[in-house]
Length: 329
Ligand code: TXA
Ligand code: MG
Image 1 (cartoon, rainbow, N blue to C red):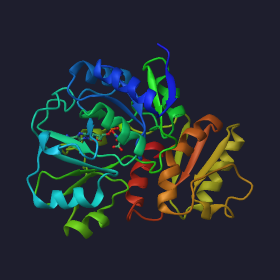
Image 2: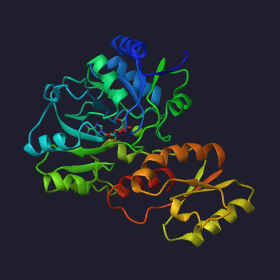
Image 3: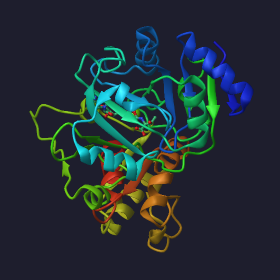
Image 4: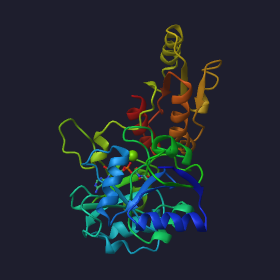
């Protein structure tokens, strides 16, 4: 199969909608990462998504809808605070896990009772979702375990020959996946950290928990138990203050004939002068936005990416550190 990359316009939207309506799957942009989209009403489309990605069969998909879609046709909203969250953060990088009404097929939720719903803010994605007017299930459009794609080209590199069309909506501005929030209980609970932070949720709702994963715990968001986001080269992760450790690892790599690159915030430019760098930016938002792009650039140039951790796990850093530990730790 030939995989085409097309800008989002009237004709590519008609083509994408036709593919989806016939049970096919396409690459779509969102403001976080690119998704691999199919109809949530079609079990065959869903099976195809799992097959193309090589995704474990017990890891449910997020359902994407346009901003005027009646989400109460898909899920029960049990608490008033959920409406406040929808008002405050959608369209945007927030996914809400709610009790499913069973409209989206069992295959998409792996037989579970809940459905994760997200209303993406990306304008091209909104146009696509309007054009199909269906609940669209989509995981990130990478091969399972690999780094998530933030450009149409990244999707092409992982899925070329396996899907007919990738809608090109430019580079994703957010850069890390949505915050996954369990809102089936009295207090919202973060299952996966992202750009909508615990602090932001507390401001709106007054309280927010973070799911901790201990060995042997029953995992509530199945995706978090798998190896994830890994670039194809070797990696290492150092504490934010361990400048000497980074320099030592860099020298050891050079001495053994490897090509090392240090991936770090712009504030380290002086400390790592003369070394190969993958610079992530200055603010937390910039760093999140560039993280996967730099990992995917790094895997092409480097034999080892030596990553420097964030100084804390507050705000957006919680989501960045979650990805850094899994990709490079
Ligand atoms: O930003 C995003 O969320 C991107 C874009 C494409 O929307 N999507 C994404 O999908 O990251 P994926 O499949 O790579 O990650 C979905 C995460 C997984 O950790 C999965 O376990 C969790 O959401 N999830 C999905 N449905 C769930 C459910 N019903 N209950 C708990 N966790 C769920
Ligand atoms: Mg993913």
